[in-house]
Image 1 (cartoon, rainbow, N blue to C red):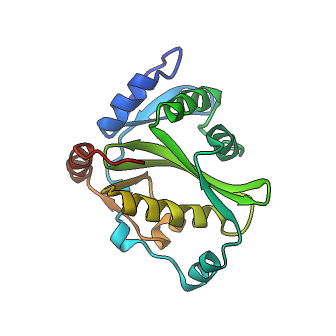
Image 2 (spheres, rainbow, N blue to C red):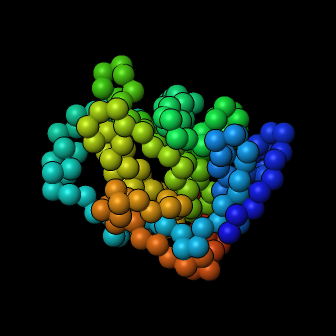
Length: 196
């Protein structure tokens, strides 16, 4: 299901309301905003989260410093810094605003003073909607995902939405569920008051 509209600006209130209904925006190559509600929907159930033996070994070595919410806008710029992306300046402005309002968050991997990996998404109630990730060093985004899952588990989040499935995400335990099941889980998660 796709809903389309072309607002002059990507309104933060509209974005939050859309997420609460299981809908999210993406821009096409011309900058036109499309609204998506995939069926099936990809989620990561934390009890199914799979970390390979080699990645666990890397995690234990702590090759990068993992931080949260220190350079949100920079993470978004890095996520959008590829040829095929929906993350334009309008998205960066809107989601950075949501970040300052405590609704959008990021996890970062640092090698010294260099940002080498990260991810970001939106948190509402007990749901986290992952948006994008990037990596410019081996396993950096994967380690950010491990840190994110540990954080969400510790704070009681019960829905981790990845929107779409990729082979990489599938290898780490992401599955697809029917749209109606996703909506049911989303409404349950929105009843919670998890603190980031």
